[in-house]
Image 1 (cartoon, rainbow, N blue to C red):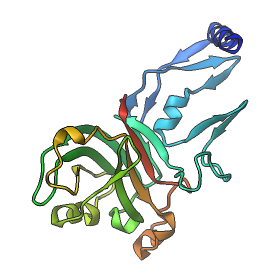
Image 2 (image 1 turned 180 degrees about the vertical axis):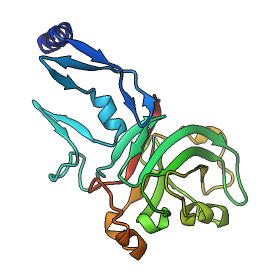
Image 3 (image 1 turned 45 degrees about the vertical axis):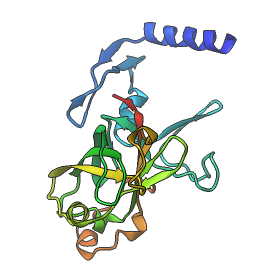
Length: 231
């Protein structure tokens, strides 16, 4: 309790000492938290940095910004990714991705019910490119118990994976995830916890991308979106 009271006291003192406040806009979109100026220095909220794709973690008294070289807590399977919520725009130097909507979907041929995740994907480079050419490895929907539903790649999905998107262009698409058992009741398919788009920078080897000097701005460009929170 002492730590909480002390933290609130310091926060209040810091706010009172602010000389000026600025509204913050990230990629043309306003954010709820202002930047403040204290003693001539401008301080930007962490929420704005996370929207730009800058990971932030607190370890004891150290605030870590950006990708960490040491293994993150969580074991060998822990994935370091750009993290956000539904409505956040995450940027890894090549792609800007925003999860727009999450909704239940009915069964498909040979498959049970599941969930649809509507995603907006925009090209942040100066050349046309596709998800396939920029190192896409997998798209997974993580359930509350940790199990995953894989994104089924069929003809319609192939058009998304291989579609070349122009500079500043984008595409909005519903990623569909079904349970493998067609007899599974919809009530037994809980709302998913996370969407993970796994991107491997080592597979960014297409000649036209190298010639255009296209590269990720973080060594861990994968997207990890929490589907139980929304901005």
